[in-house]
View 1 (cartoon, one colour):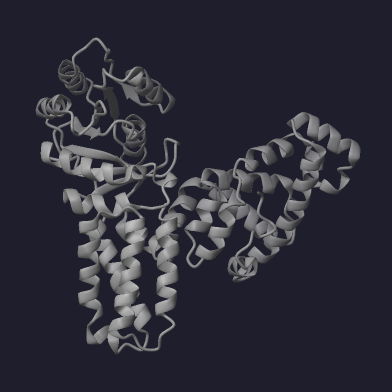
View 2 (view 1 turned 90 degrees about the horizontal axis):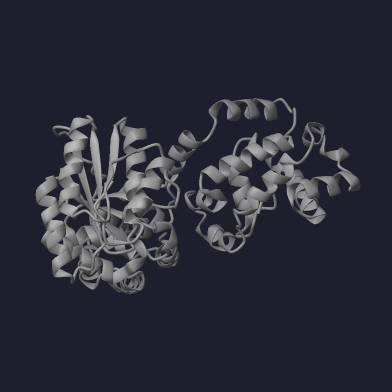
Length: 453
């Protein structure tokens, strides 16, 4: 997400940093380019207009024009204005009410409400230790109720029964009664997707809101829908007392216009952002971190959180000690690293969160194929224990056996062993101070040879 905008902003501010002193003309030229970049990213025109004017007003001050580092001073202003545009801070869900706290999800057809129900349920169970139930009031989309039931089962969440033959209003009443009786902390309600021009359906969601009296009414917005989603946000906000938004499918959108617009349109905060299909791919929306990504400063805090949450600390410590003692890096270690990188969204996701790697990540994007991880793991799993710890013994006949066992070709085995040798050399650099920086610097905008893709 934000790849297009980040690339444009990086170029714009790189040019501005080249001036020893900024003049009013330099600033106006730079802001014109920023304006074009925002419009290309599908940010709504009124938002762009106000955003540019706010920056212009702050930039034409003595503080910027006479600064010894005027380019940095301007970037600081843009960063602050981006954060303000998206809501300054993450606003947590308000669940301090008599249980069950009802969360109603509303939005256009295809925005991803049903999958978001399950993701939100997992988030509240894992992060807030809440007893969560899901229920669907979508009696219109074929299979919608069944889909939510399957997602609930897959993620070990409670599902309250509803049928397509039922009225949404009756489902809501019965679900609320059941949730109270079974002492659930939170009830997440999936509503039918609707077009904002459909008066009858908008009246229905208003009726559901009156019955459920939710403490949170969240508008689910597809990041890829552009201006239509923004118009819908305004309509839903006029119909329902929205308390916030959830931005979905952000990983599939390179523009980011919705993230920069929906808060301005609704006046309500973006509370979560969905960046993948897995149940754990829902994160708190932090405007300061998003702004850092847009301006090419990475998102190290989010990366640290992912590492903390998704890596095996005990294994990592053992590996670190092992490498420092010069005991080597085995194929078993290599396999563990592949699995951990997969759990964190792959190499591309990791590099995108590192500061100063925009030029690298742009070139890497076309080369990275995280599906290769699965194949590489299968190859290592097809080896004997001795082969994993002594790969030098893998001769031609062993390669044929491993290829047959993993459903791959001998060429794939050769490729893996070559990558493994590169990774061994890289791990020695990692054990030295500044190893990662040296590797990224040495990449020079191309794929580092040791990465497994």
